[in-house]
Length: 145
Image 1 (cartoon, helix red, strand yellow):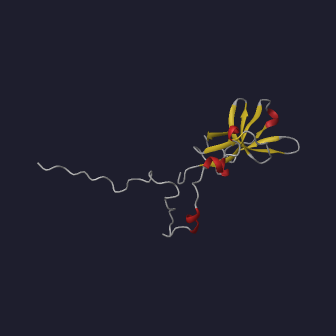
Image 2: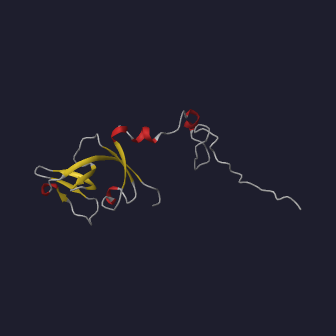
């Protein structure tokens, strides 16, 4: 009886290579001119997080902020150390519930603005139990939904 031969996949992965040894993919077929000067890979923590102890990740639930480019299932990077500024997207605590909305303040009152016409704006004058949990600094969502 003949012995069966097993053929593995030709591609063995790139785990044995460092980030610098793996060439950048380019649609034109030519490497980028800067590839020869690459020193290290991109560290997303270094790029996206300014204050590590005060930064948290949330998963967006719902479509209240879809016109702002924040979709259901997106990952929100929230910094609790940032000051509240008019027009920023925030994570708010309203009557014990977490909401993601845009903060807007005018001369007489403050509002939480949804970026979806299906939701009403919330006038904060009618609420006593409101606090800002943090300011959204980045949102990460998958390409192609």
